[in-house]
Length: 314
Image (cartoon, rainbow, N blue to C red; front, side):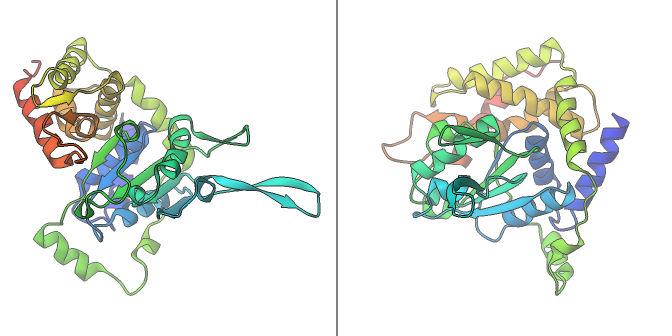
């Protein structure tokens, strides 16, 4: 793991130049990237969500597109459209902004369910289908979506089935006092992202994605994961627990976190640290009133309670 550890260290240091004091957030984002997953960030405006997405794209020499989701956005605005070319007398496909390595879906919950669902095939299959023709998306491919919790999750909250497609859900949070002081002092007159140069290439990221399944996990780790998942299914506070997809994602995320931490094997602490970001958006509480949206923090608190109750393997 020495070679991978050095590459990951360079990547973390590079992104930390603009995302100051948020190493854990950067690591969680890389977990999602290395697992070929997608990330949902729920936080207030101005926390650095766009900067984080751009910094990752710049650091791995990948293309970046930002889509501002609004109520009048159409699926074709995301995926692309067939346009008639008068010179050739044929229709040609004009690719939409989804055809990028890192796609920032900003305020995803402000658009209609029809437009939200246009992302599902891209996120699941790595391709889009237009008029029965399938187009492959570039690799690596990652959607980083954002939503603002201060406005009751926007006009069109994401349904549970779409939330489940996101590998992790995180918050960035306010910086500490010293970190915020550094942010203020280090903001230059020019765009800070101009200082971010590529430290890895696309092929290196793809190779690291292939390394994740090779991270060893003992049988006791699998039992530990199943106990945590069952804790969500039989908890009196939870109406609907985590599906098998959630248990697979928790396992993969634990492997990726172990790799990021420089190990070729998973320890229980990897599972315990990553579970509060893999599982909360995959449960539905019994106490939820009709029409009320699940609170991410409330769900996360219950997952943390379950983690305290489940015995850690020795």
